[in-house]
Image (tube, rainbow, N blue to C red):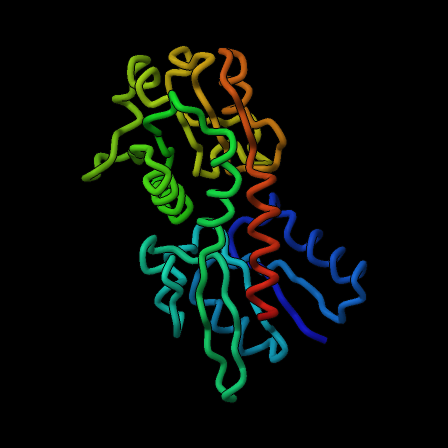
Length: 246
């Protein structure tokens, strides 16, 4: 039996195991998908060694950047972004080779491009992790200036504390690429001046559990167009399966 899985911490929010195991049942695929909740990235080596039929892994927070040092080969997208969310385990040569890909990039691009309008010129990307970097690259490729927002004073970023309502008028695409507000902490939301949001604002949350996060709820209250990350997740899951079975 083939095995696949996901590594991250925590993993209560993830639909991946449910999605892929249902796919395997419906398509009569002799495989199983497991959730590997690991508290240290080093444990990925134990997972590879102890699961000899493991063909691939999804990678989620907080390991999308940390996993890179364990990979034997990187896709062009990873070289641009510096983050990986899919691993193909190639066992053709005996010793497993880990090949990294980034499907967040293409899935987010396919999901957000149809809902962008001509007045969307600049974006705030909340977060500085692997997902945020994929989002920033997509925005720039779509011709939208994108700035990362951080809790810390880092070069090339804006601190949450310094955001104003005027900033939200200027940066009228706001993407939450952090886990803030994800199940089970569904009452949390990024600390931004939501009163600066209006009907020209597009707010996109990469989180898909819950359906409407506090971030999206606050935006909708002020008239923003909102979208959660479920479509993006489904698109990247489809792209992931193609990679594993290429």
